[in-house]
Amino acid sequence: MKITGIELRRIAMPLRAPFRTSFGVETTRDVLLVRVVTPEAEGWGECVAMSEPRYCSEYVDGAADVLRRFLIPALPAGRADAHAVKRAFAPFKGHKMAKAALETAVLDAQLRTAGESFGGYLGAARDRVPCGVSVGIMDSIPELLDTVGGFLDEGYVRIKLKIEPGWDVAPVRAVRERFGDDLLLQVDANAAYTLADARQLAKLDAFDLLLIEQPLADDDMVQHAALAKLLKTPVCLDESIESAEDAAAAITLGAASIINIKPGRVGGYLEAKAIHDVCVAHGVPVWCGGMLETGLGRAANVALAALPGFTLPGDTSGSRRYFATDVTAPFELADGHLAVPAGPGLGVEPVADILDDVTTSTEWIEL
Image (cartoon, rainbow, N blue to C red; front, side):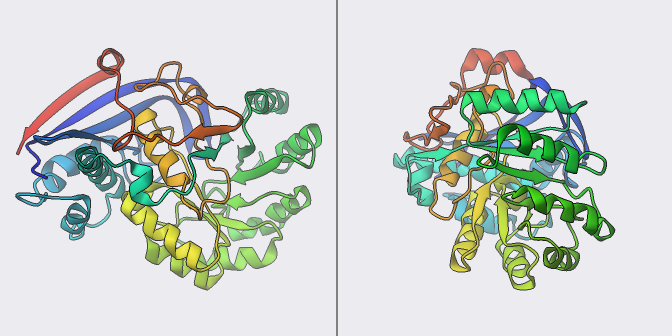
């Protein structure tokens, strides 16, 4: 597949409501889209880096710079596929989200040319996936309960609550008491705690949670292993897992009994599939995390979440969870599930007029 040019497109996507986590508040999603053009097809990739390096070290301006200066010039000459692209990026340390965006765009173009879907290529075992929703930190418990109730009315089958010191046991207790023991409920700390908080985190054991996600620092699997021994609630790792090797290490250490796979965080869907395979081999369940993606990123995530090892509902919410208007035809929840796109490549296309309306800049790079 000969790549003739690449477009870097920045778009600004206002969120329907502010989304607060332990590391900050987002009101608008600053998104970098990558469009790969070949004589046969074009492909799209979405960079999930945030505007500031708070979730991880990457940020949107930095991702655009590393794509422009290093990754695009490293693309294989002549005919290239996604595996060749991944190998070409290996000498460059880090920048997983930038790598994932370009690799995904190449894979999308490759699959569109071949007439094959993302789900078929990755090994999807289902044509729809159950969906959970992530609920940010609220100003009050009544506001939280109203929000959770609204999402349950929409049909979401699992609720994830963001937590931080001072906003943990009380909101979890309130949600469990209001909505009952049958609700699939989990929490996400985004590395907001330390091992010294183990006693406080152990209080969450009373609420029969599916898991506690990334309670401690992303670079400390040893302390996660120590914490896991002190909790009845399963520990799930997110930010700590950037590769299949990381997943294997976490499993071996006992640092995680569940793993969240975010393709952007791990460098793309090829590595995400490798992590899935490692976890399946060890009997460790996985689920698909989200980064407030547009319909382009959501399409690929839904295809990934259809693989057999994804046995827990992911953060593959419908489009209107975050955006009043998506850049693709919206993903609509049906019976708590989203359909896996069946068309070639991502199986979705950006709507030109909508995309133009939210675009803040474009850059064309001829190859």
